Length: 173
Image (cartoon, rainbow, N blue to C red; front, side, top):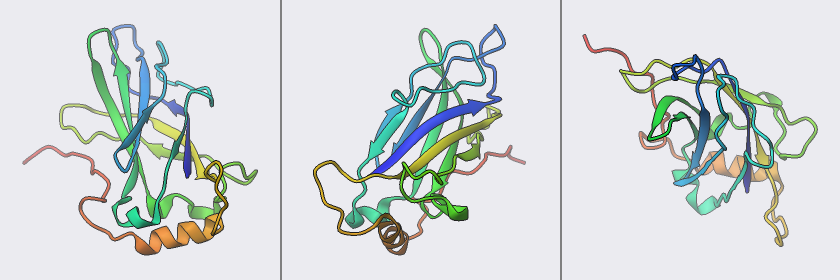
């Protein structure tokens, strides 16, 4: 399983009249979505690990559909939510720069990604910080170590437009 912990966001766009936002993050992988709680009146939310740590089952048979881990940041309002931007982490970047494969490894480092907008009408600012790594599924014996699993996932992943991360929008000419 891939464990993803949303740690914090920094310098998000203020969408509310009081100069802040009420941000939360929706984390998606392979059609499975989880969301953090809403942090009230801040553009620099931090999330409690017990409320912002999510497990995503990973199957080698679905490796060609993995694509990217998507993080969409929203501002919660009374009647609706406002888009603040998004970030993504492609599979091949999950363990770049010597990051540990096991979630609980002491050498596991935080990943910080810029929040960008894919919508013409909405600017975006800030960063989102996450920690990710593999954990063993409960009641199962590991047949491969985490590094072997990751290597096999990358090998089986095929690049396609479906798995490509979104791109920053730009005004039409």
